[in-house]
Length: 397
Image 1 (tube, rainbow, N blue to C red):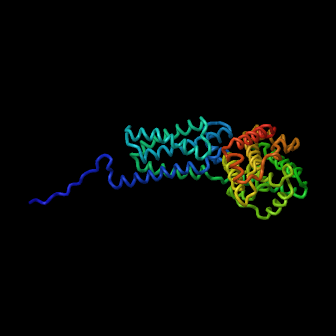
Image 2 (image 1 turned 180 degrees about the vertical axis):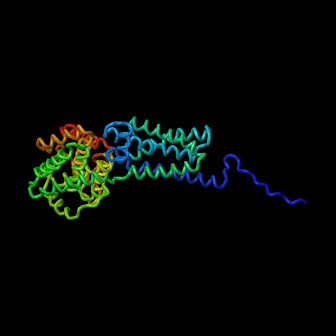
Image 3 (image 1 turned 30 degrees about the horizontal axis):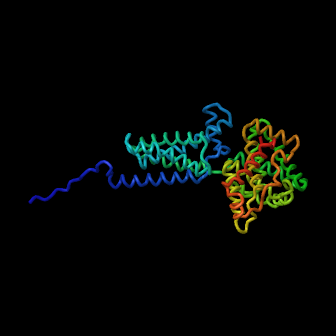
């Protein structure tokens, strides 16, 4: 009886062998992880795109700095959703135009929109939806090509890691760090001259932005204003803003900053300047949505047992600082206009609405019962009122 031969059976369609199965699991894990990254980590920040990328865009297109920064940010966001689409196709799609590939072309854009929804805390507006859909669909088509190239797939993973580091970093550049420190020293040099109360806050605002105006001659007024805001955010807000910026704090100056915080007020309150400037600083470093989100999270924590209670007034101060930073750095014209307003004489009411009559000290139970929580109609009415007051402030337009 002849001995049986051991026949090697090539893997058929869909059976791929252990190696291909292992690779498929790897791509699925990478796709899920990247989806969670897009859900949970900060969206790329329009006010803090890497300077070398902005310079590259300007050199390639000849457009101005604000437009180049916007192009760099939009490109980064599209790259993030494109990577999601590519990884989805690598994980779940087919090599050709089969049903699996077509399903990924539909589901990847939907997943990109869902990730933005979770990240922002609201359903994306039409422009954001279109960007997510186009980016993910393009990435899925690219992923169809990458399925045949292991090296190209590995490069896609490395690109995702690089994108993560770029898009979520809050470290400022050396030039901005030097400029912010210079403004901070200039402000603190006059610490003994600063009057108490609201007048002290107005004095420090004028001094910081007079310095920004001087630094704008022959330079970039947006960068000068960013330096002034970051300096005041550290001095009047919180030293940890420097850590968020990826820079070491000058420990020797901390007592002087703390002494100023204990003296200056906004509408007679010592805590509202801190809300305003922390929010302004975080807007530059982490983006407007993140800044407001941090303030909202803090208020919700304060509403629990042992806290000071949920405060719509604190949230309004946060929102004023947020909008102030956006107006001060929107473009060169807006930056210079704000400097001119400061030099003509600071009126704090131009930059922060009346906060005195907004509800404060609301416990968690009362916030749910009386205001319906974050989604309640009473909450929305107060939010709309805060927006109306902010819109009426001349310096925040």
